[in-house]
Image (cartoon, rainbow, N blue to C red; front, side, top):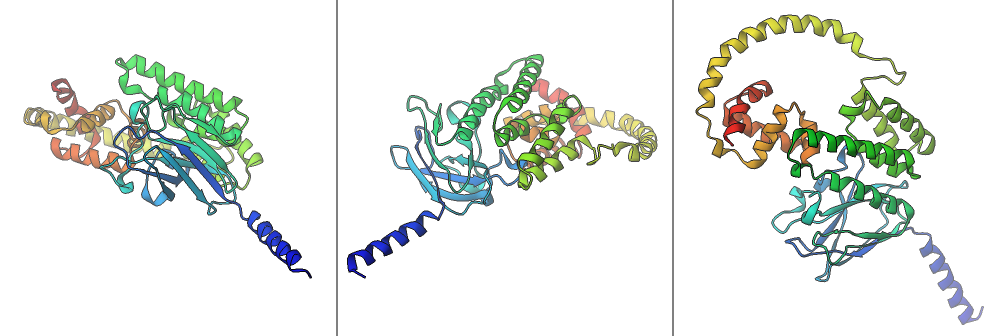
Length: 353
């Protein structure tokens, strides 16, 4: 065999084998006008409840960002199926171990994308904006364009802390959830629809929108039968609806027992509340409102509003463990040990603040 032909054959074989190795690529240009590290992190979202978390153990890749904001991420270590991932930056004073995801405004430091080993994306922030991902554009595939549309719908609506009145807040939350249900219903991508539904308030809308949630579960089983998100969504749905796979409620199994306990507990609680009422008044006057941080006061307000730890974490975009840590500090400063005591003592404190 002539040497030239042999070299051509070897080169062709090498290129053919190389082309069989799938590799994702994410490149782009970001804004680094704030105090951000020159690093970008790619984190996996294996569970739907981790959609807004920023944990170090979820990071699967990272890359440097040059002084002009340019970066590139490459890899071939993703699962076979497409799923959600986060791209995010970290402030200079932080490490990836205590990173935060900032929503909206000049600090918005993350985006969600759909990725597999064959994805090639180009992301560019508008250089006239300030946030790292400010008014970004994304090129690569239609699913990630839909994810961008979803983000444009969600994040302006999440600026709830700028709202002044409780009724205005409720109206804004209701509108956001209505928009999310509509988006999920009309979106052509099952994964993007899942992202939209995952951001709805399951606690508040499970009763009124159970059909939407369950119909989408059926769609997942058809379109993505073996996807981890399909199983994850099913478990999440059962948790919030308290309904078995056959649609039979479990509540009746425990309702009688709970009624019995509540009757006894009410009598005991009434007696205890009467005893503690005077003690509460004495302790309230000795609590120093200046010892509370703004975050602690905000969490205290949400406790008074009847929010659960999970709801507080979702509304403030912080980890559930962070909420529990803040609450423990609150209890210590207030000299209490439970939520009911916090609600009773909070009114006078919040008025002082």
